[in-house]
Image 1 (cartoon, one colour):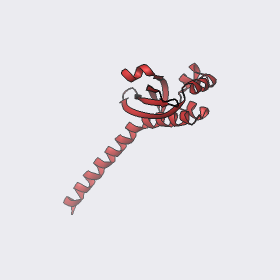
Image 2: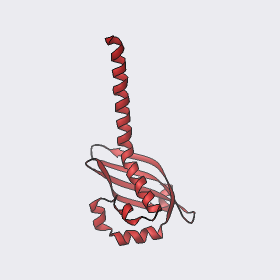
Image 3: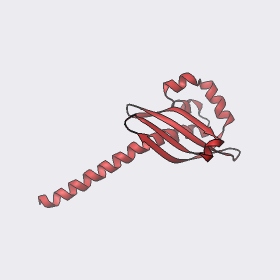
Image 4: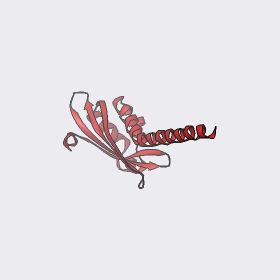
Length: 131
């Protein structure tokens, strides 16, 4: 009986580890997706809430709201996520399509605070399509 249980326990442990790694890897991506969803729905306060306090200090909400008006996001695609576990930082890259049809690259830098990932900095610009 114990010979049958050992493989089941091993498979269960491997599956649990794999799922927890996927969840950890997706966490920064989910923060950026939630931010961009709020941006595309013109929800200024919601989009702003994903910023780290340090970013909020350098970009007041009214300035961010003006940027949202100048860069109306219609849709987005996340193409890469890289995480530095030792530093608690992540970079998320992709593209956005604006309401007028123009495409721009995006790059978000995030910092982990506890279990949460917060946006530390970001850039949405046509030049990022070629990097």
